[in-house]
Length: 466
Image (cartoon, rainbow, N blue to C red):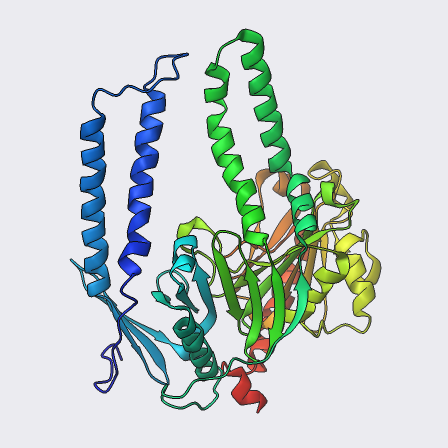
């Protein structure tokens, strides 16, 4: 039903919201003007022309004023309400939008605090639901306490817990911290990253060349690399800063962020796929990274895959602890041995099926490692020799299945098995199986997925548990 109930109590966002949102417009303008000024300088001339700075300043102020008015109108036209079943959001200036977020499809709830919003004690509430894309909603900005209270209320109702009509505060469920990332380890993981090494090599090479030829042109040629890789490296540090993971009755709670802090709550059972990965440079330190796909949680604003990182960097025990948070029962008699074979094993031990010998022509390093195993709860996939990758997909989370075969695979009688998960960082696939083995896996996994879905629990997990 797209028409909201008549008895809803409609609310507005915090009045400071236009200021928090509008500053970004001014920042973009200043960046563009600065870049244009640098690019227009004569080669070797580091001074800035000042003939038309008065017009530039007036232009910046004018555009900033227009952006501020637009932000105020957007705030004025936005309102929200909620009841036991859904959250309703009305927004839009030229084109009105009416959005309904059903709580029984709620996948995750985030509290995001950009740097300027933290100064005013504000936070943005982001609701992710099954379906992804634009099916969720953003409520920004609210007072910090109001955002926390609303998150607790929505999670309780999404879990099937009876609550009051929103007049009484909902206590935050207790939690137990199980994962932490020390700053030293985070810094080390960023330094031992291929992107960081490429960035440092590029900068050192450009500086050396500029000194030798006594011109600044090489420094400008390396700027795209510095901006691109530098932003990526900083995002890895900033996103993992202060990372903690906790378990509570309402889900898995993740807190992290340097400039923009993020508090995420992922309800249990909503994770669709898990990936545990270790790069070559991390092997000596024994570090691993854990990422997940969550339905409706894949493509965030700002171009990042929000909610994808369950552990930025951690020991082997930390990685397995993160896995147990989302899949406490692997469905294997000897889960420790199976996980050892999954993470660092090779060959056909413990029931793993690997690529046939002829696959060495396509993957000479990892053909003995690439393969899969099946447990009572999930399909386990491993691949890669230099970068070890392990993917786990619960049977009931299988979206669809397929086979992929390139021209060289066709000549060698090889086929890759593809398991389609919800959008996210993980695309599970078993590479270079024999044709017959890939077809057999396709049929068997389809049967396992159907059987697992028939016995899967209801969406409102705490109600079922009660």
